[in-house]
Image (tube, rainbow, N blue to C red):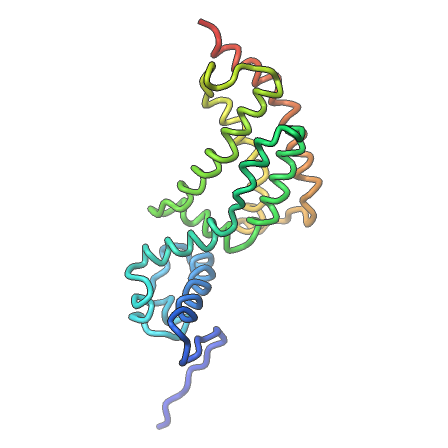
Length: 225
C-alpha cells in the first residue's frame, strides 16, 4: 500500500535556506505560534507546524527560553521608539499635545494581534516579558509624564517632593484605559471602534481635566511636614 502523503497549508521553509534565513523563518513563525498557543505551546508541536525537525530549532536557539527572548526583542524592543521619551519631556509643546501624540503613535505601533496576545500570555506565565516591558513604560513614559504635569501646575519637582505611587497610578490609569481597547479587540474579540484617533484624544483630555486637581492635592499632602 502506498504511503498517504499528508499535505499542510502552512508555509514550509525551503530546503536550501541559509542559516540566517532559517533563523528568520523560525522567529517569524514563533511569533505567530506563541500568539495563538501561548508560551505553554510545545517546541515539538512548533517544529511539526513548520515542517522542520525539533533539533533544527535548537541549532539556532539553545532553549525555548532563548527563542522566547528573541521573540521579545522582535515584538517589543523593535517597536519601541526612543523618541517617545524625548517627546514626553519636550516642553516646547503643551503636555496634552505630547500625551496625545505619544498615544496615537503607540496605538499605531502596538495594536496588533501578535503583539497584544503575546503580551497577555507572557503575563500569565513565568516569563518576564510583560514585566520588563512595563518597566520601560514606567521609566520612559509614566514617571516623566508625572514630572511634566507637576511642572505644568508649578508644583515642586521630584527632587524636592518625592514622586508618590498615587501620582504614578494616575498615569497608569490613562495608559490602561487606552490599552484596554487592544485587549477587547485581540483577546476578548469584542467590537471596538475602527478609528481610534478621536478615542485617544478624548481619553487624554478627560484624564488631564481630572488629574490636575488631584495632582495638586497629592503633592500638597506630601509636602506637609
